[in-house]
Amino acid sequence: MNETEYDRLHRIKTVGTLELLNQSSHYNRYEATPYVALDELFNNYELNRKDQVVDLGCGKGRLSFYIHRRYLASVTGVEMSGKLYQDALENMESYDPQGNKRGLLYFERCLAQEYKVDSMDNVFYFFNPFSVQIFMSVVENILQSVDQHKRPIDLILYYPTTDYIQFLETRNTFTFVKEVKVTALHEKNDNERFLIYRLYSE
Image 1: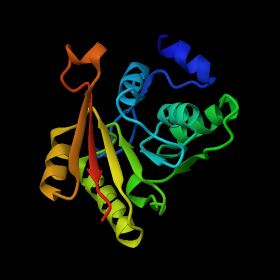
Image 2: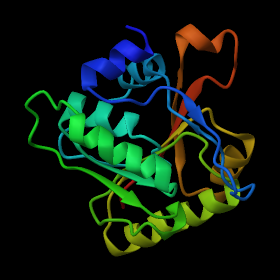
Image 3: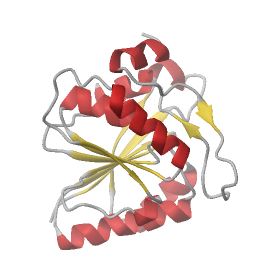
């Protein structure tokens, strides 16, 4: 299926890009993770119903709907743009969960660094949504939550930047677990890959 057909399956609209106007250099434009990449990732990385996923810079919610429908897991999409947040809510109205009433699906409008990490949040997804300075703040918030509620944490980076990678390797709290290359796209672009880092529970 192509992008539009996949959207139609979920009864949502996430195709296209959007430049975020009047924003600082800390934030990047909206572009949803390609469905072919999501298929590749989740054919090589398993979630379960008990996982609680947070998509930082969720845009119109593609990843959130994909995970919710496929795994029955709970997902929170965090988005700062009012326009994209509204689009995500409109997608929620039309979304077809295929009978899935188990996992919760929620969208929150706030800055990523202001998101209050829930004690059950354990998987965090980033498609290069903002600068490494903001990424660092988000990671510190996650670690503070783990200090209060011990649990393993996974960070999933799509199209990872050198800055993100260097920070995680320097921070030395997370362990690199796996690289998943997007077979259909990686030959033309080395950045078409996922990197997964894990914080192991004590």
